[in-house]
Image (cartoon, rainbow, N blue to C red):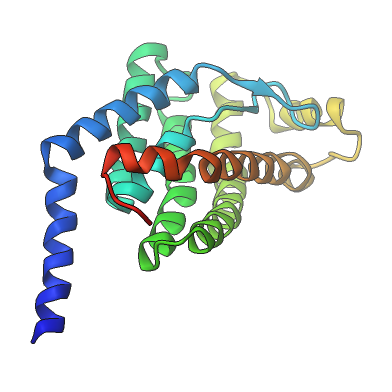
Length: 214
């Protein structure tokens, strides 16, 4: 009976922390930071110019680690909505929807694995799993949704879009090679960098957010 009560107490505590004033304030603060970070994008040499890395997933991961995967999804959603208000859309909202799904593909697996055992090793394992899952989801979404809609939005044939990839990497000659040689490494590099920064700063930031020690 004591074990059941302890488990129930942990669940209730997690719910309260997410819906408490501190939890809501934290979500709002991390969402705002994510939006600001989303404005600073860095192009990569192996991908066309419209693929640029930002570090807006770092605050999302911090929120997901501290308050759970649901909080991560909420922060990711708020980030996308605020960015839409600031910058609008050029892909009829499809690009933003894809970005939301790709972001969640990194954050949710990472947070779920971390929440199962709150150690540095589980955080690292979660981030590795999240990076792999994000890369897989990102590849599928780019091949079947984002790239076709991007081409349509700018009224260009897919061959012209592929040619933009060929310009930076002559080995890119088709949509499949575009995804394999540009999209996959892009998401891997982003996942690795974001994960590294998160591991460096999470411990310190989490104590401010929740006051607990992992």
